[in-house]
Structures are given as structure tokens and as C-alpha cells.
Length: 99
Image: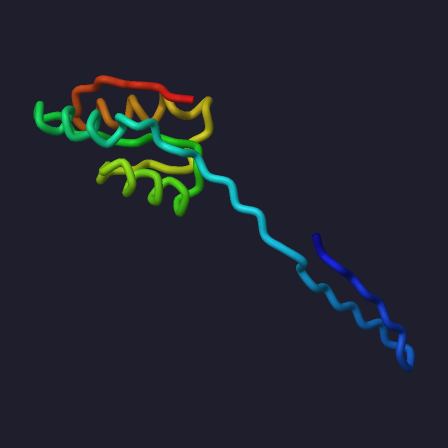
């Protein structure tokens, strides 16, 4: 919540904004996510996280899960296009879609 105050002084309007707090929300990983990523990598698979999250959030989640490759800020309707781009680069694919 912000507190805003306006002051009119000598014909000039002064506005001051003071923040009263900050709210942060983040996804949490399932208990077995890290183990699943490790298992996929042990099978020789390259794990890529394709997400609509912003880059900072995506990198934080990927780091926690042990995922090295992240493609952030992808809208739902653009995810198939991103997958096709990866396939065009010769990458074989197995896609897991999560909430």
C-alpha cells in the first residue's frame, strides 16, 4: 500500500509517495523435482525449462531445481513455436507441462 500526499506550495504541486510494504509470490517446487531433473540428466537428456515467468523468477526456480537451461517469458500460445525452434536446431524432445 502506498501513502500519497499532495502539497500545493507557491503555485507548484508536490507529490510524495511512500511505500508501506512489499508482497512477493513465488512458485514452490514439488519434493521430487530436483531428483527428477537429476534422473533425466543421468539418462543423457538436456533439460530445458520453458516458462511464462519473467527472467528473474524463471532463473531462481531453475536454479533451485538444478535446471541449467531456461527460456523465460513465453506466452502460452507461443510455447509450441519455441518447441518447434528447438526441434529445428536438431534437439529431440520430450515435453513435460506443469501448472
